[in-house]
Amino acid sequence: MTNYVQRFFLEDLDIRGAIVHLDSVWQQMLQDRDYPTPVIEILGEISATAILMGDNLKQTGRLTIQLNGSGPVSMLVIDCNEALHLRGMAKCEQHVEAQPIPDLLGHGQLALTLDMPSMKESYQSIVPLDGNTIAEIFEHYFKQSEQLPSRLFLTTSNEAIFGILLQKLPATDQQDPDGWARAEALAATINDQSLLKLSAEEILTRLFFEETIRIFDAQTVHYGCNEDPAKIYAMLRSLGREEVDSILHEFGEVVISDDICNREYRFDALAIDAVFREVSPTVH
Image 1 (cartoon, rainbow, N blue to C red):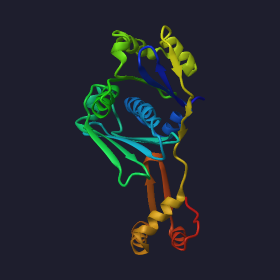
Image 2 (tube, rainbow, N blue to C red):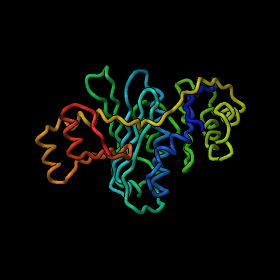
Image 3 (tube, helix red, strand yellow):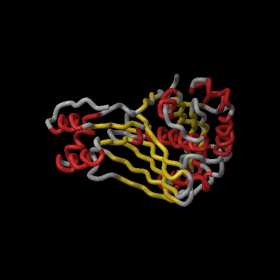
Image 4 (cartoon, helix red, strand yellow):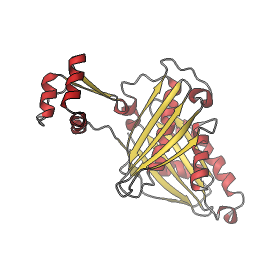
């Protein structure tokens, strides 16, 4: 199993890029989620994009990508931190047929939020869902936010996701007037499934076989849904004993759903009592 993101630089073309491949991390994210195939494809492509963007976090922080729309896929959320711990979820209708991205998502927006302890408040950028594919939506975002022409090439399945990001730097056209178009055409061949069995170095060497490539060290990606009951206990205490007891009285138990990690925490009366006595309860 290989879960990594690896940056590279096409030295003679002044084009930078990154390549991402996820298999076991992606399979963990899909475990026990019965998403329709079109939703799996969208979620996979956004997951790949989140890692390609999260790899640029230079300090402790978290990048959250959220797409909200009016279509049969109403929301997708992916986030990762500077250590490349990834998690995500989708909200959609029970049956979703294959159709163009604008029809699946409907009218909506893309929100990117960056949280860092060094910042007084979160940075958020919101743009319309402008594009016919997930790649085009994020290419539009890169053009607006970074003022750099960018191309994303993404492929996904139930087993793995794979993507390449290319960004055109200011000196690209001076280096080679045809270099950007050539690099785009070569990167577009990643849909060849045989490439997915190769290492990043082998993939890049095959894609850009006539170019001088500087390949940087790979960064490992992890699944980011480690159980953290302490946060749940703190949230219950912040509600106050009276409010929590009223929920317990009405429903017989307190249920907290962690949608992004596909997990539920259920508290009976004894567990609630333990929470407010600040001891570790037995939670089922």
